[in-house]
Length: 278
Image (tube, rainbow, N blue to C red; front, side, top):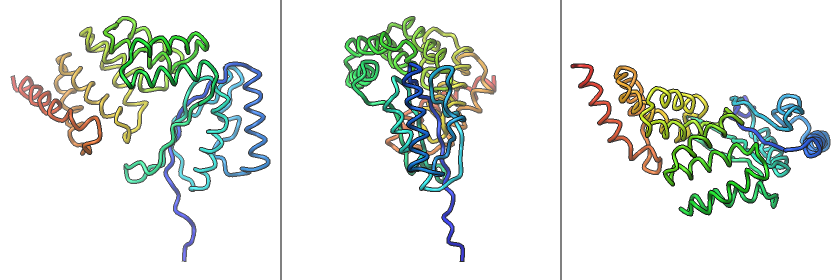
């Protein structure tokens, strides 16, 4: 009888920025010490796979691993520990089965460092609708740590809501320049380009957001819908049809932000089919 546990499908992706050589060396020492004295062989990543001396960062390229629950818990625990030394960034971790998320971690710094605290305050203010104050807090975070890609992305979102579209475009582009592996700034920049009727470049941004996100994340499907919408306006009806049909094949639960966009996708698909028939 086979008593071996079934391997789990685990997905990791993200980056943590430590800001200085001193902090980076402290983190690396902590990582190695914790593995030697406690975690042993239970960590899914080796230090030389994820730590970069050149930019004082920890980077986990998006990857799917088959492993055990013990490795999942140990790896996410150690990532949580080292995240508290960081000035910015996040690492996402997903335990997925049959297209459903069984467990998810958004691993990020939570400390009283100004860059960290002001980013969190700005993000919360934006969620509550206090856009002007959110912009100030996010600017404070950027002032303290100029490579704060997530603060630029959130400030881009705030500027979008405030209808400061050129500022939003700058912020999303700056976020991408610092870390081109996050889907959110590509999605945000694509929406700004839609407003400017720059349909082809919007398609490119949404395509990047799709590639950088997971099919279990709402942003993946929102990006597909926006890509289909942009293709329709670019008069690329055949490509738009494929994207919209793909979106409509997905069954969204009511709590998914994509659920309310099904009528829009159906309308756009109908318009594409009319145009293709002439």
